[in-house]
Length: 122
Image (tube, rainbow, N blue to C red; front, side, top):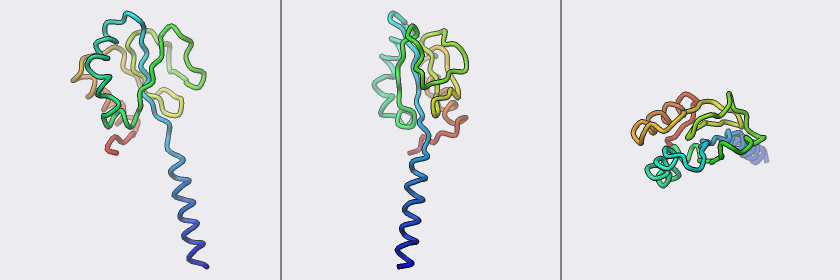
């Protein structure tokens, strides 16, 4: 009986710890006609959801002309497209303004995730 209670307590602790995982997303701010958004779509969009970064911070797109989602707080006004904003629990933790090309995008995104202590190793 005592052992069952210990097992139950450990199971409850583990399930509670799992539910504390932060909601992490990469927001892509875009607009119709944005050449750099189109280039990102051609070079990255098909790879991103399959990548470790895409698994750790799934992509959400918002139009720059639309009202910002009410459940997100941005550090400053969104001005450029594309802008990539790393959000943790609805708060901006970092951003990349513009698309620097495929190689630089991945390295800058890796730095953003590392600075936010987001593990992309799975």
